[in-house]
Image (tube, rainbow, N blue to C red; front, side, top):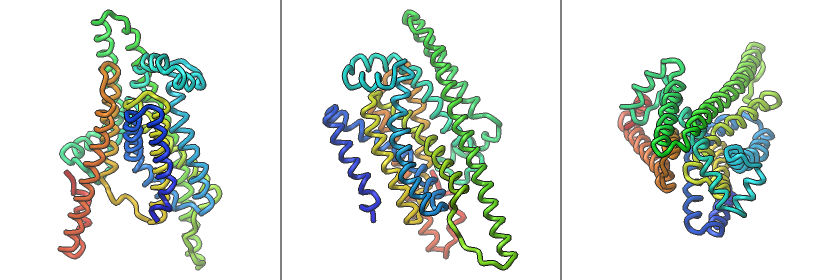
Length: 383
């Protein structure tokens, strides 16, 4: 079962890692491995959410999502999107960006390094908003680091708090960059404005993506409400009610909703990759491997019916996103080793997984000891 579900992912992993060695040696191998683990970790909650929605669709639309949908996810977001970011930031054509990365890596590195402040500001703000909206979510019942998450969740009652905090951090970053540039001769003072504009663009992008997700979610809720009304009407008329998977218009809205969700989840992995490397080839290999595992995890969760057994993984992924956002903003001015950047996220994910295992064991022990009353402690077991 595992080999059948993850077989293609294992094959792509082997090919990707071998290609990395041929491209840049063992250092490239390490970077691609870190990117793969990071993408899988950050996209675990994506697979869980995908599976929860996908199981509502009929077999035809499930197949559409797992074929056409994954092509869009892998080739559209994980492979093409990094090229577009580099091309726009370095003011190159997409073909020229790819050509330079292969044939003139020194010139490519120079252009990308020059464009890094804008890339980092855009990505840092996008990732920061994901983290802040999670940490300020007052409706979240399960907390991992209770001592910090509960007080911050209460602060989430303040409207637009995450936007305000993000803008304050962006302002501090831009002012620090301008001050440092001025002290070193003022040659890059004008780039403080670029950092500010790029950061605001990242914030706007996040809000637009969130708005689209909300729109399709609203359409989905409307369709589910119609389905519920139809079931109630059938009950009143004495007709048998069967759990039919969604098809037609409802399934189409589900498909669009899943694609927008996948795009929004892809942003964090793609943008986070820039905190580790600026090389398009290595990004494509690492993120492509990770995207294949997202598909396999989605299929596995749908087939097995197992959703979100490790409840703190989502927390760990969001803390990793928050750490990456801060690292990206720091790299506007200071260089940070890519292995340190990658390790921070992986360590946070590993800690959250370990905490989830401990929680499951504690709940199992409590349930065995008192006859199944462990559900009450489900929301309070954390660090």
